[in-house]
Structures are given as structure tokens and as C-alpha cells.
Image (cartoon, rainbow, N blue to C red):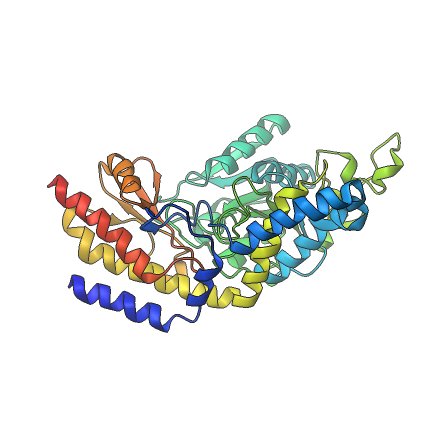
Length: 409
């Protein structure tokens, strides 16, 4: 059976139309990397990224100095936002902006949303969403005297539309959920849950951190109000790369984010006595954009545009499906179970495996050149990024994990 699984990896890699993109990623100088299975936490750098960063420092920064702001940097949060919207988010121009950390942007949009629904006192969220989403809403509820309505969700799946329909009503100002659950990889029904929120007069904010660049997203078509996501996972922006925010065009005059900085004013260099919000999506900006941190996005958006998100998603489904087969055949005999959806239509770009004692295997896995992700209490997340990961690499990683489990017997 092991030979059959390895043979499948060879066959899948031979037939992979995206195989050539692996050559666009930098490989480490050391040769101890056997399998990188944490693309859902931090994407690998591109060869083009290193060249762009070097060029930026030497030519644009050193060469142009302060003139660079007038030669395009000032518009990067908007122009890169438009490109990201077109390539990965299904968003028309003028609705996406790059800047700040995910946590800050969730705060900005969530605060703006509840303030835009005066008289409504409830915010709906789920118990297993990523901590920053929950913590930010807890803080806003404390600030604004709002009631948090918690939906209990199964960590092995995620939020269901029927659960949302049971709790939203005329008192609901905002609902906040993740498109792809960070723990299980469950894909939520964004258009249906958004429709349910709208039917009650509420706004819907979506966290796209585990879907942007991996799962097809259609924000405009789904009539999404607000969305936030990071760029350091499947978008390969690098550690701490700036996040992005989406605000639907017809809401931009209605919603006002609470952190009023000079870059979000109508005329930043007028230095006026009072804040006058800029028209459109620029009003979401606050402070000076992190230009250097945006450089890697140029390279990845070029690559993602060439590959196509639909093709990336197709390979992702094959990768995670193959990973499930490996888990069933090689790991289940050692007490490993799958805590992710088996239905590919409901499964995002990563698979979570569970077994008591997995945490103790993390260090030996790293020492063996296999880099997964761990989530307490006993979840091992495996996230093979489609453009940088081969089926053979997935096989090698699971094989090392099996060897470690076998030694524990």
C-alpha cells in the first residue's frame, strides 16, 4: 500500500499543470528541509521577491529617496489593493486597501459596522473562531456596551448557516465569521450567511486569512459587506506582511472607521485643523503605509495572476485529498484521526489531524526536516500551499510522521 501511495504522488506530480511554479520559490541554503507543510501559516519566499527587495532598497529607496512618495508609494495601498481584489478576491476596483495588521483592520471595520447600526445592541460570533477575531469583538463590546451572542461550533467543522439564522434578529448589528476555519479548514457558506445577516438588517464581516490565495473568493458576487485578511500565508507576503481590508463601495460613505490618521484624510499634506475623511476606500488608512513590507506582494500577485486562483484551488483540493488518503492508510493505525471536512467543497487548504501527544512530536518533526503547524490541545495542521508544494513532498512529510509514531509503539 505504501508503494501505491508513493506511486500516486509521482503520477500526480507528473500531471500537475502548476508543477513549474515550484521553481519560482527560494530553497534554503541548508539541505535539511524534507517537507514544508505550514504554508497556511507562513508562505515561502519567491526568487522574484529577493530580487524586488534588493532593487527597491538599492534603486527606489537609495536612488529616489523622499521622491518615491510622489512616484507611486503613496498610492500603493490602493493600487495593490485593486490588484489583489482582481486577482484573488473577486472585488472590483476601489474596494480593497492594503495596510495595518489583521487585528487592527478587524477593529476598524467592526467598530465602523456597529456604529453604523445605532440602536442594535448585539454582535454574533462563534466560539471556535481565531482568537484575534473574538478578542477584538470582546473589546468593542466593552467599549460600546454591546452584547456578544456566541454560537457554539464544532472544532471539527465550523459555522453553519442554520446556526446563524437561529440567533440573528432586529437587535443584531454585526456578525463576524471566518470563511475558512483556522482549526479544521471548514469552508463557511459565505453568500447564505451574509444573506441571513442582511435579512435581519445586520452587517457581515468575514475573515479571509485562511482562504485568500488558496480558495476562490467572490466578494462582490456574494454581496459581502466587509472583509479582512492577511498576506503572509498563501499570498507569500513575508512575516508580518500588511493585511488587507474590503469595504463594499456602497457602504463607504456610511461607515467611518475609528482610527483617524493623517493618511486617511481628504488631503494628507494640507495638515488641516480637523480630520476630513478621504473619499472612498482611502478613508480606511490611518498612518504612513508600510511600503517596504508591500514589496513582496508585487511578485506574488504576478505569480498568482499567471497561475489563476481556480487552478490553485483545484490543486489544493487534490493535495488535501491525497493527504487524507495518506492519513487513513499510514497514520490511522497509530490512533490518528482526521478533524477536517472530507467533503472537498467544504474543505479549505489545510487538514488537521488529531492524536493525544502530538505536541511532543513537533520538535522531532522539525529535527527531521518536516515543518507542520500545531494547535492545542492535540491538533497537527498540515497546509500544503499549492504553488510551492509537490505531492511527493506531502508523502515524504507524512512518512516521517509515521516513522515517529511507529517508534512510540
